Image (cartoon, rainbow, N blue to C red; front, top):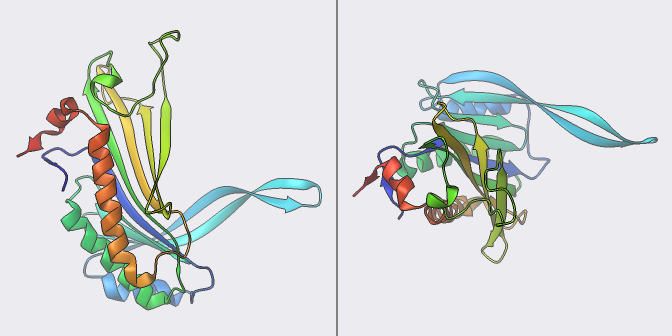
Amino acid sequence: MGNKYKNPPIIEAVCEFRFEPGSAWDLAVPGLVYERIRDTFPKRRPTRDVQLGVRQVEAGLEQELKTTERIRFLRDDEKAFMQVGPDQVAIHHLKPYPSWKGFQPLIMEGFSAYSKAASPKGIQRIGLRYINRIEIPGEKVKLEDHFEFYPFVGTKLPQDFGPFIVGIEVPYEDARDMLRVQLTSVRGSAPNMIAVLHDLDYFLAKPGSVAVDDTQEWIGVAHDKVEEVFEACIKDSLRKIFIEEK
């Protein structure tokens, strides 16, 4: 198990499931899901996602806007919610994060409710993602004093650089899964604060390689890997900021 912090930097955790197309879906599905999760997520709210895509036409390629209708079910405090759409369901938790013992049951409750309502054929993708916002006091901060994972700038290049983004993908479980790690500069909450987003996204890279019945085991492994890599990315100076609990 990893360290526990009084002030963890997590601003959002999300577990998303995407299923094989063609599962039973109609307007009744969200209602059937709601009947199973209404005690936990009593609020209902329609949402619409708009994405820019590309399609093939006679003249070549052209851009098109794709709209996806979803239903969002929210807890009373709106710090936790789940989104349901055709062949997908996602469970989110915003800050303050309740620990894995608090988040994991919400994931399984949402997944179970969707599975019973829509009877998905199989899983195309699962993703467990943690987005951390880390602020460090100081007008000039050396990232290497706080992180093991950061952008390297060679000695012949200017050392005082501006906005940045750096990322890697690491295979796990014989490349069945991948963990994407990113560090991105963002605006601090005050002039004397340096801020970054530390984003860890563990996902199923081989569609169909995890059975519906094995979902709970998969997310447990995913969480352990994410926690392990997070701790490997930071130094004790950040643990002091997060106020490590003994």
